Image (cartoon, rainbow, N blue to C red; front, side, top):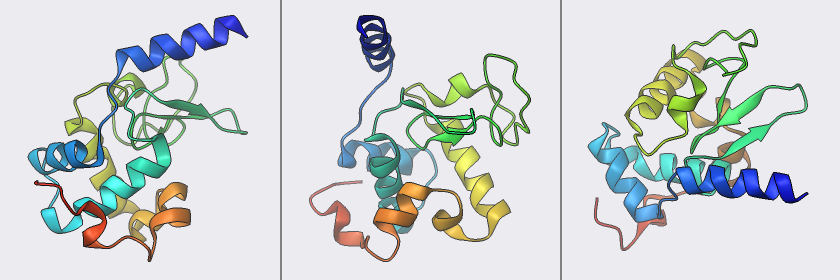
Length: 143
């Protein structure tokens, strides 16, 4: 138990946890339209708690990486060389740092491929944000 806690602490220490407002600002800088940013922030809040270093292992053995929980079977190359479609053509570690440009590019690509919007790519969005997130979700934020 102590080893797992230490690994978690090291993983969290190497990433960044955004606030909703700071994430909105970063996303706009990285090319997300202002009119859409509340959807992105809601998804990140419910996928990762706004933390870039989060990795969650799924029941099928795949893992989700970073603030948007990008999957290593479909969208990025895992460090253990397990088979992956790697549709975003990035190592999964690229989605666990403070630089969100590559994350934004990957999510935009997934949105175009899946044609269902955020509901088709994010269980967190599907469960907590779909139909429930409005532009006033980011009231008080300047972005």
